[in-house]
Image (tube, rainbow, N blue to C red; front, top):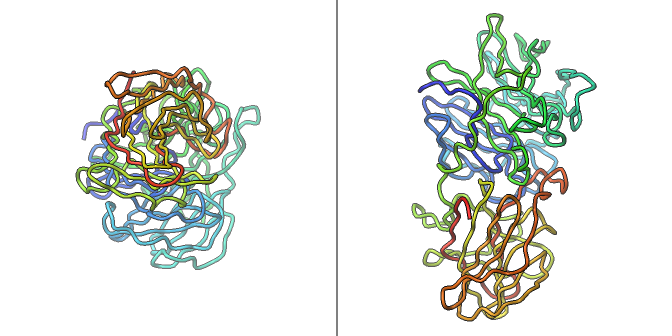
Length: 473
């Protein structure tokens, strides 16, 4: 494989907290999936820059947001450790594409687990705030008590961050040392908040020595393209090259969420690793490399005939309220305050989404943009009229005859316009539009992103077909 230079955006869109593992010539990666179900989408690559989705590791909602997983390969078995609902869980598989086991509750708190095994075969789970707990031999339960083993790297007090937040310990063994790659500074907040720090020890029992090159990666100034760079995992290639996979927000595009970046590292003669020109913040960025290479957002998978791998439901409430019928997704209409939209991740600064909607009596369907409950805007159709939609409230109703209608939503640099196609095949634009640059964590919390949403409301069913997503207007 040809060595990769500079900063590469290998997954555009909201793919935060990346965890990567290599098995032979194959690379596998997963990310935080929060309240989206199914969760922990598995990606596969042979070259670290071209990625294809392979399946999901968690098919159920486990009672809380799935955050910051650790994807490992140990003695012929793949494991993913992840926190959710105030505890930590583990799932296993012989093949990353699945099937995966059901989640096992490890009954231990803290977040951002990182697995490690020593030369004697003892297994541990490192956690946020510098804690560690011993695991059983099979890695499916704990076998000891929490202990504090690391206190992080003290960055200068004058730096502008979101908070100290020692998180995301990821363990790598190389040339006689265990390297702990951690995140500090907070994952959002100011552009300069997040960072990647390194420490090493000759034993998993410590003591841990901080790298003289800390922070290994950090956004130095808000003028840079990538903000809040952090949460890194080391990965090597069969040829012996090393890289850090991490996440960052793109300047001025917080609603897209934290995107997955890749950057080469260099090992020094005294056994530390460095990345880029951190003093100058001058590492070049290649832009959204993967945005055009990612598969389309087909609602129905041509391969499996099931729901497309890029689609997921909000929470676990309505995740089974659908069926696949003739290349369409039919959603059961729901009432009340509990939303359950079907979502997918946009990856461009400007994009267009279209879908054809057919509704039954008493139901209406919407094509919108969803951040979290209470922040859901778009366009809808009730069988008679198209209308602008804001958190369940309809306005600007326009007659739209026929049994179905095609809706269009354009997000042009955070400015959203709404269209529908009439029975003559002509597009009509609604006066109502939205400005959505503030739909991100620093304003609304939750560490989420703005996602394309399909929802059925009322009574009966709504059929969605012909979904299209494209870059540009």
